[in-house]
Length: 204
Image (cartoon, rainbow, N blue to C red; front, side):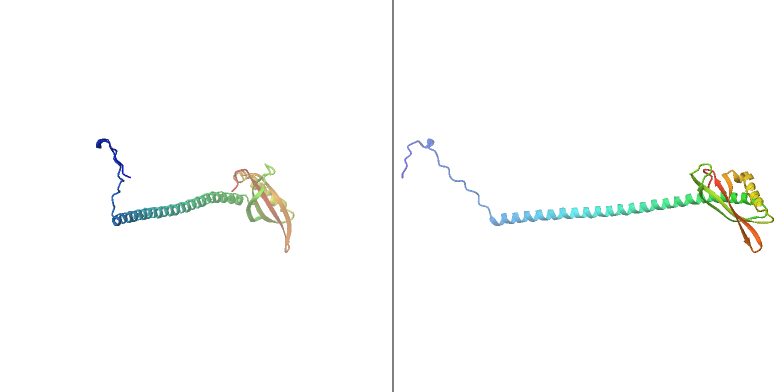
C-alpha cells in the first residue's frame, strides 16, 4: 500500500532505524577471556601458595613453642626436684647434728651394767596430748642381773637420762615401757625398752 505524506518535510516523523551493534572480532575476544581466566587461576594459585607458606610457618612456630614449653616444664620439674633434695639435705644436716648431740647425751647418761642394743625413732601417743601422735625415741638395751640388782641398774639409767637436762629438755616423758627377763647359759639378763616422748616440734 502506497502512503502519501502531504506534511512538509520538516514536520514529517522519521522512522527510527534499528541500532546496529559494532561487529567484534571473535578470536581476539575469546583470547582475551581465556587470558583473563588464566590470570585469575594464576592469582588464586599464588594466593594459595602464600597461605600454605604462612600456615607451615605457623606450624613451625607452634611446634617450637610447644618444644620450648616442654623444655620449660622439664626445667621447672628439675628445679623442684633439686629444691626438694636440698631441703632434705638441710633437714638431714640438722637432724644429724641433733642426733649426734642426742647420742652423746645418752652416752653420758650410761650407767655401769647396762648396754644398749638399738636406738630408734617412731610414732607414738604423746603423754601430754592423749590421742595425738608424736615422735618417740625408743631405746632398747639389756642389763646383767647380779643378785636382784637389775631393776636398780635400769632405773638408775632412766634417772640419769632424766637428770641430763641437755637430753630431757626435748621430751615430755621418759619411761620404762618394757622389762623382760631371759637366761643366757647360766647368766640372767633383763631386757628393757625405754620410751622418750618428744615435745611438740622437738622431733627429728
